[in-house]
Length: 265
Ligand SMILES: NC(=O)c1ccc[n+]([C@@H]2O[C@H](COP(=O)([O-])OP(=O)(O)OC[C@H]3O[C@@H](n4cnc5c(N)ncnc54)[C@H](O)[C@@H]3O)[C@@H](O)[C@H]2O)c1
Image (cartoon, rainbow, N blue to C red):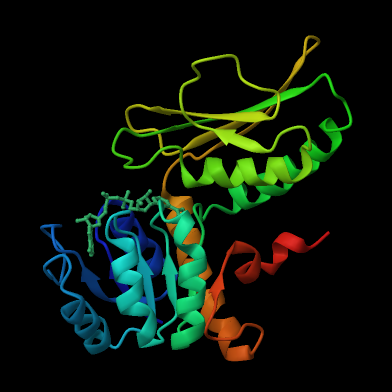
């Protein structure tokens, strides 16, 4: 498959390696600032971005840029109707708007805050654990994440996703608190805390704690290769499933849609 990479930073470079390793060709690396990008387009020049992607002949797009540019990129690229996978985080609250846009223009987009298959499995484990722990009123719950000091947003999109899976089954809590506490936490509040340090690729922990013990569920990414591989596989699956009719164009999809194995017993 011919793939255009929008954003040629740390992830862009890894995506290129993964795409080539899986037999694809990277036909464009587009980034306004990266010195080694194949195509440098001034940030915010939507027409030039669209022209560059179209003239590259790309059959799929992978976008890993910055929370401040992702919405603009989606709005420009989605109407091209080239299947697109977006890895940039920090636009959770705009998902509904993007789903409507996809429906209107017929473009297809897939996104997740974390392309690691291990994290997708973690979500299921957290949901199941929360369902069980919910039956024992003595347990409290919390989430902690740690990432490298170049990450622009906190908490991570993954931590918020884990929180949503936990809250869906842990009925005593219904509100996420990411700020510092000025008073004792209320029982209904779920504390999601973040640490930024060094080069950590991504660690997420869920704690269920009571006087007797702590249950700790942990996911540690060893490198960013798993994320890049996951994004390329997600694009491969998205394109194959659109072709076979398993998925329809004009929608916003997530991990569960493009990796149906996540549902297998
Ligand atoms: N979903 C996931 O699994 C996952 C995994 C890792 C990182 N991320 C997210 O992906 C994003 C990028 O991560 P990174 O580590 O590659 O960051 P990075 O800072 O190394 O690279 C981002 C690149 O985007 C470029 N850029 C900025 N605006 C642009 C625009 N308008 N058009 C094209 N390129 C533009 C920057 O010049 C930079 O080179 C972040 O939001 C990060 O949180 C998501």
